[in-house]
Length: 252
Image 1: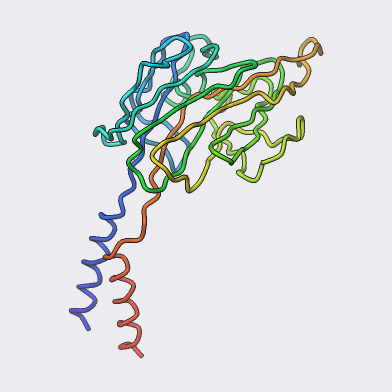
Image 2 (image 1 turned 180 degrees about the vertical axis):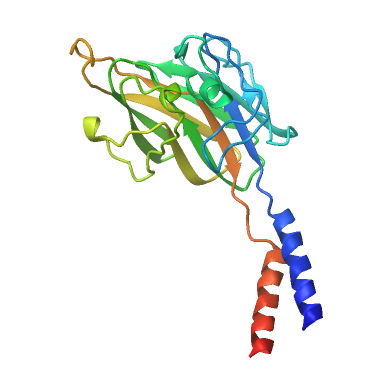
């Protein structure tokens, strides 16, 4: 019995190391020249080794090589297109989450486009971040393949207000205009394929200016994103489950 228990502990420890999930992260440029040099990301997704981009508006044709959270090359590359870059608070960011969240790429009419190729993961989640310091609320549509998530960005909703990450649920698949759920990040789950094409598109809806009550401006933006590997069950993990079953039978 004691030997079996010891073997189970060893197997489970080995399986934990085998199912390590890698992740890649990209921080889009800012007019303030901010860079993420430490750890950033929502709880459960925070990581280091973000790739900081620097192109003005578009990197189409200038591909960035992505590394994982350990800083190792992955073979994946990325380029993107947007009609503008921005930064909120104008240089007042005090931590890496603010530097990542309160800046990025945006567009008013044409979609923001992000293209990643040679993704090494069999299955992965995509975490997309966004904020705004606009004086009106607006809604945006984020799309990967046939899946879309709608998010409302509140007026003056920049991250530096409270440094709180709020996820828009993946069930927000309909444009409800002013009733669309608010937040500053979304998660597309269980994506497959070595190529990723992510877009952010304005829905055309915008709330009133909270100060002047004039019609607001529609927009779509992306502050940064992560590609997070979803680990598959391993042979060692399955073996560990089998040993648990054996121990239970012997205990009886």
